[in-house]
Image (cartoon, rainbow, N blue to C red; front, side):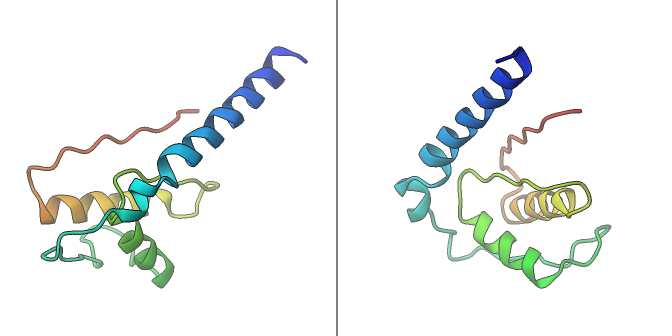
Length: 103
């Protein structure tokens, strides 16, 4: 096995463990939005969200940790922007950590 294959398999295993332990944990399933939370789905400066994106935003807002993955041009940046917008509109003092890989 060469170095690149090892690295790829290592990262795949790490990703699997993260998804199993953080994203799909019991704690995540019990997360809830505050009752006063208001959704903003028409966001100034962004393309109009489709129904699937709106549904995803509502589901992701109830989680403490979320992962957005997909090939180029699938709306990941728009989705993330809409989520951050919603968080700050509902709680301007929020602290958010956004992590991304870079090519």
